Image (tube, rainbow over all chains, first blue to last red):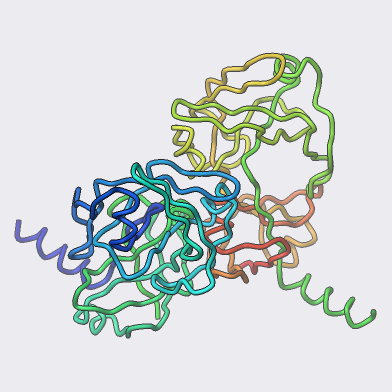
Length: 199
Length: 199
């Protein structure tokens, strides 16, 4: 359909697709060994190239509560990181700081329980700052740069303009906005919904 | 402190205080009798005059899960209403429509479990549309009218501009913005945080 391709091309130059990230865990290889007795295995790929949802799942435990069957994302990283929403934090009894991925210094810990063992993290629990993964081409098109923040207008059931949305430019990324489920539900997000970057 | 009173008076003409509403239940008198064997009793008053948090608590049950110890607000009303966030709905296995309080026609039901009995609601579960309770004086000051929607800029840890915020003018109300916890957490709300109405 020539018309549909034209429409898609136009939309692609105006909007960015939004995804919601549920609570999930990143592990080191050593931690995977302790928890599962082996390294992570891929169940299905995620939108970011090379990243995958693992077959393996964990129980995530805090001082006040726990979540079972929590998603683990692979491949393994150099340090563990647990990404939860502030609502999840209330259930667990953990108050995560709002941080960019990788910035875990001084954040609270939690206990991870797997079929083969447990790992007690002394830090690593954060609420991911809302962010846009964007390719260099798209960044140039929208006039944004790595590490800046922008506003994002959502075209969703409960429309919102999110401020302080971090921009992360890399040619290893596909272009997607990532929200947590507090944010996704606050704006009435459904899969495939679009947002517009506001400078 | 004369200066502090002046500052408060100025802030009061620019901003509106924001409150977050956790999941809660409104009952009829007949339902209170079935669930507790008596009418609701007041534990503490809420910000809206005449409204109170009851001493009585309920288990709220859906097809997929339940919450125990859920707040019940009094006094009793002419129809039951259960207000939850979309995140709560995921836990319960209920997809509540986003509605104004009182507009429950065709909404999903849930089971309420009290110490003396159970009530199966056939409808009444909603996610409250974000709204501003406002006095006629404040409505005139801010130039807003009953039933219109406005935008609300939040001065919070994760700033957001909420669109589609319903305005409810009544001289029975004090002036407060009411958000659910998805919205409160999405904007990093803390008690006492302020918002600004944008027309």
